[in-house]
Structure formats: C-alpha cells, structure tokens
Amino acid sequence: MPTTISFRKYHGLGNDYVYVDAMSQPQMLASDLPALARRISDRHCGIGADGLILLCHPTPGAAAHLRMRMFNADGTEARMCGNGIRCVAKFAHDHLGFRQRPMLVETGRGVLSILYTVIDGRLDSATVDMGEPMLAPSDVPTTLGATRNGQVVAASLSQLPELAAVLSSACLGGPGGPVGLGGLGEPGGLILEATCVSMGNPHAVLLCAEPSDVDLARIGPILERATVFPERANISVMKVLSRSHISGRIWERGSGLTLASGTGASAMVVAGALLGLVDRTVRVSQPGGDLSIIWDERTNHVQKTGPATEVFSGVFEV
Image: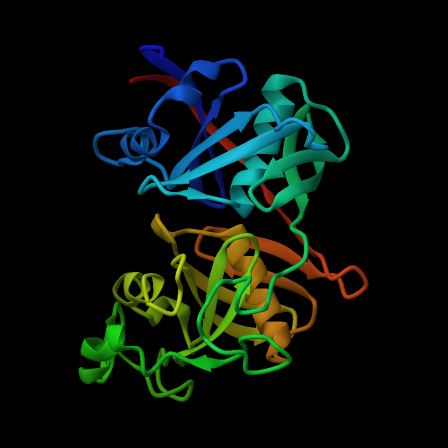
C-alpha cells in the first residue's frame, strides 16, 4: 500500500465525497477500505466528506466503461449513490479521458447509463438512468407489509418500539420550536407513514408540512436503524409544493444529514407518484439545490439530472 494517495474532492449539490482513481492506484484496493473511508471522511481530522468513492476497472464481463465503489462516512459500503455517480462521470471525463456517450458505469445495482453536457471542455451536468425503482418489500428490503399492489405505500411507523421515547414526549423539537407529530395541519407536522422504495439502496419517505422544521438529526438515526429495515434505510421527509415541485431533506444511511441525495430525490418522486400527489416529472428542492427527476411511464426507469462540481485535489497520507 502506498504511503500517500492522490484524490479529488467533488460534490453534487453539497453532497460531497472524496474520489480516488483506483485504476492508476490499484494498490489501495488491498487496503482496509472501510477504515480508510472513515479516516478520510472525518471533518475534523481527515479531508471531510460524506464518504469515499473509488473509480475502478469494471469487473470481467461487465458491459461498462468503469466501475464505481462507494463507502459511507461510517465505512459501510453502499451499492449506489445518485449524486456520486454524476461526479464519477465528471472525474472520468475531465481527467481520465473517458468520452463515451453514454458513459456506462458499473455500480452495485448494475450498469447505469449517463448522458452529460460539456461546457468549455468540462462536464457540467449529467443525466443518469437510475433504472427501475424496486418496490416489493423483499427488494427494499423491509419487513413492513405491502399495503397496495404489493408495495409498501404509507405504512405506519408509529408503533415502532424504537420511537417510544420520542412519541412519549408528543413532539419533536425542531429549529423553529416544537414540531407536532399529529399531521400536516400542525406547524412542521410529520406523518409517521413510510412509503418504501429502493433505488439500489433502501429509502423510507415520509410526508411533512415543512422539512426544515423536522428534527431529522433526532429521528433520522432512530428510523435508519429500525428493526423493520434489515439493511438500515435512508430517511427522507418531503413537502409537496405542487404536482411538479417538492422539497425535502434526507438522513443518509451511514453518513447522517446531507445537503442533497440523488437516490433520495428519486425515491421522493416515486413515493409522491405512488401516493397520487405528484406527476412523473418533478423538480426536487433540497438544501443543496435542485434536481430534475423523471419517472418514465413507458420504461419505468427514473432519470435524474443535476450538476457535478470539482472542489479541489490533493494527496492524503495513509
């Protein structure tokens, strides 16, 4: 293992990761990658990030140009990152000479196709074919039972023993004061009914009156590790602004509060459409900015479009 590794820092709407070209630094693949991800992601003693993403050669037989491996800040490896894969495409295009259209990136949920726009020779934004959402309980996965057409739509979480202490206080304290749990009629009210979607990683989406008023830092880690999610889950809270616009926030499995999530935004749109609240072309506003999501009725695939931004590059001692 080398004593140093070269890296680049990117973010997609503030969802930031450290990226390493493991094709030119193959030695690092033999290292303790979970431990390395934790060190690198530490915002006080490391580089600081929501996680670590490696650009690798595709596995033999995969019909892809390169492979993405992604580790959360806590060292757990995830199958997919929606913002991360746009930045993988930017790294590959801008610095490694990949010019294929579409660019095919192997992920834990399969090979995904990416189209992109270029400004002044640099990749500016990308549209990722996220594939079909997985909605059966066993595919999410969740032990919550299907409530509609074999899908987990608006399943109650209010009886979870993990939430007992929170529910006994009758409110969640948010930045704007007490936040009621009773319903959307209350200021910031959060409805504890989950619509579960997998976009290659598990998501539970809940409706609320105002995402910024929900104390997601308190309830997120409780729901992430709830027993009904055997592989843990990403927790999103969303507000429907119109049939073509929603706002939301996400507690990301293994990383905590993030400014944006590509798979989270996709899951919010799928959940909103399943609930009959939004159409299939939706702008999703998150603290870090907006993503455009299309759930194509013809193909059943989700298309996600957003920017990718390089921050800086450097060398990290290991």
